[in-house]
View 1: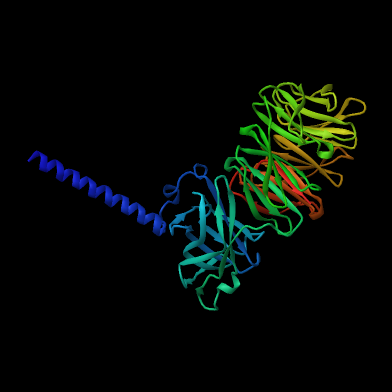
View 2 (view 1 turned 135 degrees about the horizontal axis):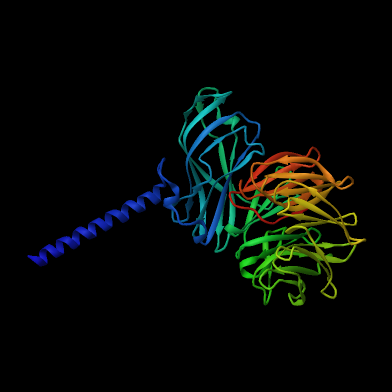
Amino acid sequence: MKTDRFHQGSKTQALLVTFLFTAMAAILVSGCTPGNNLKSTIKNFNNQPCKVSVFLNLKRPDCQKIWTKISSVEILSENQLWIPLELYSDELVTGTIKTGQTLLARGGLPAGVYTKIRLRIGKAALVRGKSRLLLALDTPEIVMSLSKPLYLSKGDSTCAFINWDVDASLTGSAILKPVMKASPQAIPLVSDLAYVACPEIDTVYQIRADKNWVCGSVGISGFPTYLQANSSKKKLYVLAANEASIKILDSSTNHQIDVLQIPLIQEPKHMILGPDAEYIYLIDRWTNQLIKVNLENGSMEGQVRVGDRPEYMLYIPDRDRVAVSSELSQAVSLVDPSSMKVTETIMTGGVPQGLLAYNGKLYIAEADSNMVCVYNLQTGRILKRINVGTGPRRLIENNEHIYVTNYDSRTISVLLPSQLNVQKEIYLKGRPLEMAILDKRRWLYVGDGDSLGIWVIDLTSNRTNGFITLGSKPMGIAVIQ
């Protein structure tokens, strides 16, 4: 009898396990039903070998305003399994997305081939002023075949786009019939591009400057932080901090063409490209060294100690010096790049961060004193300290204006070098940090770690022109034009 009960219990357990397995498989195959938490149905983004970001592109940014409640976004694998992606935002209002593009969903995927995207809409309404007129849905489920399949290999990070003609989706009655098409990323035909490193997801995003839209991404393992671009050679240099290496991309194809492994470096913090792109310079916060690397063969050609906890650096062309700011030393070291020797040490009044050389002067952002120190490189004297916002981090110059990101006060101070004072403050919603300028378009790109994207500043008016949603903290920004 005991044996019979044992076998019965075993059968019952087996049936229960089979039932649970079948139920879980059914959930994965059919996708999540509206109201389910998608986070509980997928593994952590970085635990999967491949990554995909799905962006929504509007045919006309100033289209009719339609509020939609998104229930789920899924992608179909080659074995006919619908895999749910994590929604970045489950609500949106068309006609209010200034650039006409927003991040819709993202997820980690197994390597393989993916052919379709399925979007479920829970509710929709036509926005008229402060009121919403509910719309009937022609279908709550839109299945779109990708114009070309996504072929994902281990380490890939790619984008897919849902293109929505909002105006054509309204039939004239109170019915919404979404007119949508899906496509994978492709190499853009435009020449002006910006690249943004998102280290937390091992991804570098590519932005087309004519629309300020994300147009693609590439997977870079090893926590990519800072970028350097060589426009003439169409090369992008990526510092992979956790691997202590420099990865080189062909910007015309977005393919990685080389890797330089840097020996004896433990904690690479920052990277700059030297003149003529012959050398690259790195600072190592673990050893407090400035390191010179030959880009032709990847060999280390010199190193020098530059204070304690080096933070940032830049090359000063008219002085032929590499300037390095060191936090704990509260100093800036000027290094001869030929001899790799410190020729001058500038003691600052606070913790130095970003640096800018302009018109014979070195501008130093002092994060704790909320000032920009102005140092005369010819006389070796400090001319002035300018009060800016709280926690200044980085500086950049364009058309005789200097822009300072104030991390803690969520502003950008605009300085006039001729008068050594603040002309204007640009207010942002998040915490600005890194910057890059695309001269031809008159855009200033500002990374925002709180809002998880890039602010676009119009340099003609010094006003915000839009926001590029990335859904991850941006770090280094570089432009190719």
